[in-house]
Picture 1 (cartoon, rainbow over the protein chains, first blue to last red):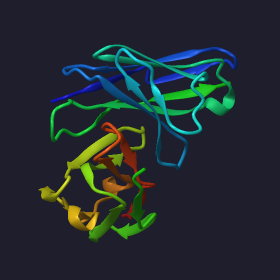
Picture 2 (cartoon, rainbow over the protein chains, first blue to last red):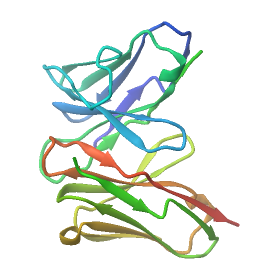
Picture 3 (cartoon, each protein chain N blue to C red):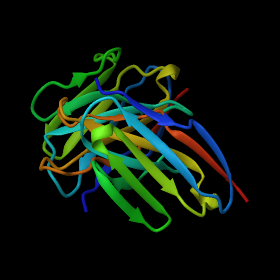
Length: 116
Length: 110
């Protein structure tokens, strides 16, 4: 079945560095992928829609200059957390689905980001 | 945008008990999924169920799209059922966006 792979699974880095997270659809193409953020004991909040070949669409309140999204191919979207600070520490998850009717969303396993 | 409400927020069960989790949504949907999030954060897809009823072992789900709700049934609960259950919906508009409810946190006691 359709699989979404996310890398890395976890990352620890110093404040001020930039961190890139990759999201790949392994056996299907996706012109649209989604990035979510989850704080402890909370739900998943949609951050942005990643569009292949065009700019991402960000949800209200999400800083586009802080969270850079690049969707350069039909199977890869990247999220870069720029100049990360401790408050950016969170669990980030991506998703995609086959763009034919009646298909579920497939989610990556998530990336746990800790900024020291 | 579409709103998703789940109830109850928290649930404690004795092992062997049955339970029903509810998901209400504010508009027509293209897609509805139930997930179980494990302690490592992985979302385990339980059901893809925009309408109708499905069963998988001790779990079953029913979505009544015309009345905008879905139910997840857990029978003969086990301690391994503990965790957070999310309902997630994709509206008819918004380009495949999937919105999550706040979740139900389930704890099954031995």
